[in-house]
Every structure is written in structure tokens, then in C-alpha cells.
Image (cartoon, rainbow, N blue to C red):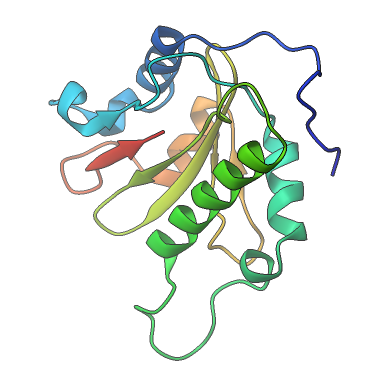
Length: 161
């Protein structure tokens, strides 16, 4: 995994662009109440990250890369995986003194929780860090396969970045 540096050249993603990217990539699954379900907490800029960079980070992390463990299915399950990944990447940005938080977030759905990253405005990737093969989806068709058709039963309840 290539280390992200403070002095790397990149174009920051503005707050409004993050909101717009979430709306265009996942809006069908968020449905009514977008503003109350989507929480873009940093009001300043974000640093985009590629799907490959996030997947490399996941594969290099001893806890996430090992995948779900047999036993109690509620202990360190999908929602715990996405929160752990979000925390680890926030700590990565902090410890490497990056100028902006990484554009990585979580989507909580009734039956599953997933991570997502924003690479650039209007380029988002959905990542299932809890799956054994660490699947990712980038196109609307791939996202539809991963999430299923939008409905009230499988809509996003909470989106956080």
C-alpha cells in the first residue's frame, strides 16, 4: 500500500461535492429523509481515496483481513467492521498529519453495514469489508447487485462520513 503523505498533490473534495456524490451513488437506497439520514460531519474538505488504496489497507490490517469469526454472529460483525475501518483510517490521517480527513464512510442498512470511499467528485465505491473476499462495487450495476433493488426493506438507515 502506498503511504499517503501530507505533501502529496491532490484536489480536495468539497463538502457539497461529498454530499452530491453520496446522493448520486447511493440516493436510491437512502430515499426519503436524505438530510436526516446522511451525516457529512466535516464541514471543510475531504481527501479522496481510491477503492484499491482502501482494499490494500483492509488486506494489510490483521483484524479486518482475517474476516468474520465463527461463534457469536453479533460479536464484531459487519457494523463493527465498518466502524473499526472508519476509526483506523481517521487515525491514519491523524498520525500521518494529513491536511484533510479521508473520504471514507459507513452505510448502515437494516440487514448489513458497508463501507464506502469517495475517490473524486461523483466517483464512489461501496466496500464490504466483512465479506470473506472483501468485495467492492463501483458502477450503478455493481452497487445494485451488492445492495439489491432499492426498497423500504433494504434502505440505508444511517450514512456517516
